[in-house]
Image (cartoon, rainbow, N blue to C red; front, top):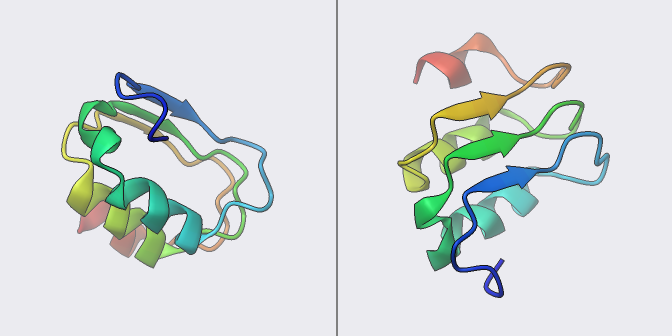
Length: 79
């Protein structure tokens, strides 16, 4: 991510190896400040913890796709 300072959309859908740790690394990157679109469809390993980290640090997110993220609960969406 550090090589793309103007990144506004990140499409990770269908990547089975994306985990909460992956999301934490992305969230901690200074380049995430411009991120407005995040596609995590079918990333079946992510949990509420990873999504909450993204929401906390990536404050410009306006579109988040979570179709078939089976380990997410509604808690992550409400918090």
